[in-house]
Length: 122
Length: 122
DNA sequence: CGGCATCCGAACAGATACTG
DNA sequence: CAGTATCTGTTCGGATGCCG
Image (cartoon, rainbow over all chains, first blue to last red; front, side):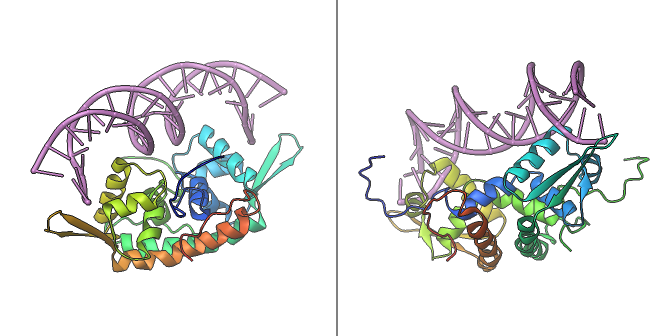
């Protein structure tokens, strides 16, 4: 690509932080990671534990997490069929950074909305 | 609201992590926080340093950051008028968690896209 | 049980024009 | 310089129906 710009390194959406937030910044991803951090879950278990998620968004979010190697999908060819989702090693390592974010949020947003909401990464 | 459900504490979008990501998970917020973490900036300086941001989104994102007390807006009544944006103490304290996220992203996404992008929180 | 395909409204974000 | 206002295309996400 030919370009004549002189602009010295403008911060772009391609930086690692932005790429990661593009993936985990949506409505459901961190909720699923939080649930899966407690152990493997089946499809319908996840839907019951995450308040308000639709089948479509659950499937879509799980597929994205699979593609990014954060979640592992294991099919057990039984009858009835069983599918279990669990965090990969990379997925487990993501919980630390997410917890530090959560701690900041608790410290700075708790006062704003006096909600009594359970922590995702205790 | 009356409900007969037995579901124990489903994880909801009201948890601190989700509320925070609703605020910082958009396309521009962390880029602005990254730039401002290097010092105060004027409106047009920010627009030049953040690649591709429109005036509308710059204004909108700055207003949200003000509302959340992450960014401070200081107007100097000169001629021509000058407005400077800087991180609040809360804003500066957010950079730590964001850096831990960035480090994870560098470790796990670097290989996927071989981009040479500058770090936001070095 | 664990999905996929389709439709549709709402929210998001860019381009453009205008202002104190 | 530092915005506001409006219009418009794009994306997100919920509802519904069907399938192996």
